[in-house]
Image 1 (cartoon, helix red, strand yellow):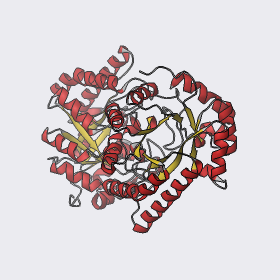
Image 2 (cartoon, chains in turn brown, green; image 1 turned 90 degrees about the vertical axis):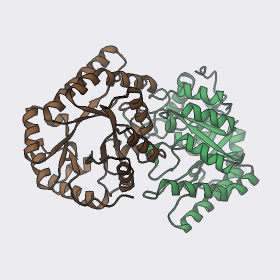
Image 3 (cartoon, chains in turn blue, red; image 1 turned 180 degrees about the horizontal axis):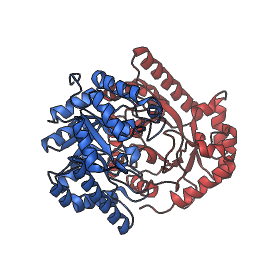
Image 4 (cartoon, chains in turn cyan, red; image 1 turned 120 degrees about the horizontal axis):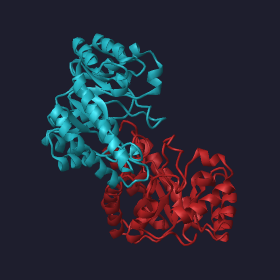
Length: 276
Length: 276
């Protein structure tokens, strides 16, 4: 079991966690609370000068941890798959402009299309954009998603599958994002985290909690400590596997977005130190 | 891929599928629609003479396929675990009185209790009631539940885990229930169904569909054909593994319960023949 986190030096918060805030407010308030990293969701950049936003982050003392999200490669028609590849190319340009070293991939799935077909399309999509990513110095993290998203969001639902696709692609620019929400239930999690570590491919670590009952499949995630995920134990496994990057707080919650975001951010810092 | 089902001779419907109906109505209408099997949820028996209800089912030409549900063995306190065992003993008595040869086990989980601890308690619970089940001639089916229920409903979330616990207990009275809703996403499903077949432990096969979007974690299952599950393909795997029992329609759906149940039952028969 890992020790409690001593301070906020590795605390990163996703812009979507405090979704009601424009990114300028998020940058200012994150920095004021001692947050040191920021992961930017692409919708938060709409209408902004991306390079200037990256500069604003750095001026506030925030590291750009990653850009969320690329992926969604599968489509039944080739035109759809080409459009997805084009969109991922734009994401790489955006990450480079922002100064973010990583794009998180929500890989995609098409309801009714066999999952193994989607997985093949995911692999082909990643391979199509990989040269541009490598040239830009931007890494790509395959994020396995919880099996409840296998219908329409990701055909990659376990860390074993993410490791398999990384093995197949075999590039230092392609690794994984380990998110406790998606993976906590998996009996092979510890072993697969070790496998990730041996391949030096843990590119990101995301935390939040699983509430009982969970009232919405998408937007009812909990703050750390509000649920049943053994976050600290999983963090220990990730650290033993050699990961020493940011712990990223990624919470989608209608309930928490409805409250005062300044209070919520204070609770995030508290829960990060006590329950992560 | 399996052939379409030629008729309703292996169609079983769960009483909870037409939840608004009292069991007497369900028995009559199931029989009228050519349904040949019935799986009885224990709440449907409340206030009834169980043996007489079993007789009524047989008189209507319906086979008692199973009783739902036993299980929920894990608890933090020993008193809770003892109470669960007592309740499972009552379920065995009820199944015997009803004439049902099988009890489906929703194995249980406790939010915050490590999943491996819950799994050990599940094994101990099954072993505690097993002599009584065997004496009564009632089999027990471990039903692996979707990982989205790992917090509070089942610490057994893949067919591999169900096979493992059956291997450990090693009794001809303990097998598995394969439910497409819980297992369709699993890349090891076909191999684990084959493993089940080799051990002759596929005791039940449950069907319904996964809707996109799914709006509720519990009660938004779809009628076969309304979603993305490759039901016929999975049925083919189960049949190749030697299963020749009933195909059980188990749908929890607030949406479908709100409509006319007679119409719904007609749609079930149609979907069974076309999309299962």
